[in-house]
Length: 277
Image (cartoon, rainbow, N blue to C red; front, side, top):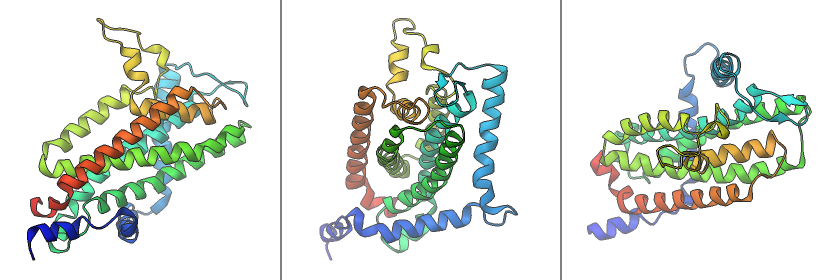
């Protein structure tokens, strides 16, 4: 069999035909996540709640934030406003990190049996998505108890679909690229730490100066990919408004760009991942 024919077979597997494989990798990730721990899946709630409490004490009490008023509650609630931002960000950061390590971890298997290189990455993203869905439901439950409900919640699934596509695309592209440039994993880890503080999660966008030495800082922060996703989620659930249509347009553009980027990387570099690993 010629190399070109083999490449043709490898690239002839569309995404929807690998659903069972992706789910198998997701199940493996979910089973190993809390394996051997006494509390098991209870940690899926305790860990994000612990993180939330830490940031609430630091930025809600010691360095007080100034979130908008929660309509159904009548006054600002920083911890709830923070919860929204952390839910979206954690899904993004955890999926990217898990995707990179997940693909590297299947190197030995990929050398023996060919399967699409994006399958373990999407499996890790799906597993993290289940975790984040639990956190999102907990966040919405808190809002429900506080009486902060509105018809704008109906748009949350639309927001979630765009976020999932954006995150899965970025995780896939970065995971495959890391196989060829191993330093990328370290650069991504550092970049995610910087991006966390460059995203309005623990502070209001109004705290960012309009310009710094001629650089439009607020504009850059406000329209960064995860900034738009965080802002729209807060608009829909916390503020009970549709939000700025430009933010929706920006989310669509970032999602399409990430999907296109992932498609190019998978087509050009994906089939040879097993040989490089």
